[in-house]
Structure formats: structure tokens, C-alpha cells
Image (cartoon, rainbow, N blue to C red; front, top):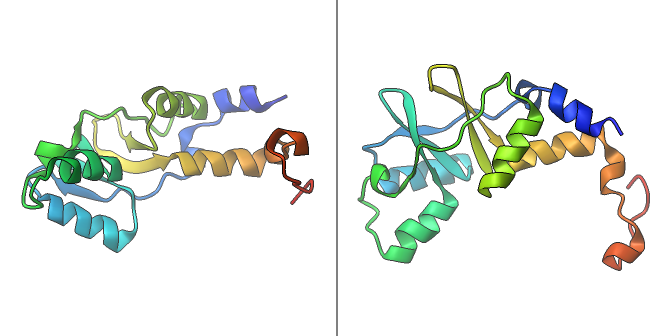
Length: 153
């Protein structure tokens, strides 16, 4: 199958990472939640002097804010995941997939060579790539899941 080869050859740029929504590290949790709700996104990139310093995700909101009764006036720098794992547009899709899987992440910031955020790569983007290019990957046999999935549906 060509999948393994293509994952090594195709670059992250082919996945068209989404526009990054970002806030300064001195913004509040309330600011982040407002942006996340408005744009219907699962994460905010946290910057200082336009460089990526962290990421604030729905998981951070649940575990580090709500789970610890932190006020929504607290700073993002206090509850973000610092120094997130990143990827660049020229890196392979395989590398992106490995980074997402190794860290158990759902979002991977895309940065330029200077550490400035230029996009967000989500697991959803990679899954869409796999389904579009390899439709046979999601045609599961009936016995595996106990339900019928018509081929090509």
C-alpha cells in the first residue's frame, strides 16, 4: 500500500492547517473562552511578543480551570500548556501524526522557523486526508464492529 510512503512524502502544507486564533499570555481565561466560543474552536495559541509560548485547550479549561475552581480572571499564562509541541509546513504528515499520537494531542500548532504561529493542525484534518486519499481504510468488515457498513458509503 502506498499509504506509508505518502505519509512520509506529503507535507503538512497539503493539509491546509486552519488559521490560528491567538491571545497574549497576559489575557484572561475569560478572554480565551470568549474567543473559543465565538470562533467555535477547541484551542487558542498563547503568544508573547508574537512568539508561541503555549496553548490553551478545552482540556486545559476542564482540568486546570474548572477542575481547580480557578477564577476566569486568572491569566492564560497560569493555566496554559507551556512550550507545546509544534510542527512546520514542510514537515511530513507522518511526523505530524506521530507527534499527535505520542503526546495524545488533538491540536498541533504550526509555526514558522522563528516560532511564530501560522496555523493549527488538528486530528480531524489528518483523518479527512486519510479518508479522502484512502477510502478503503474506513470500510470495516461487519464482524469487526457488529454493524453493517456498505462499501463505498
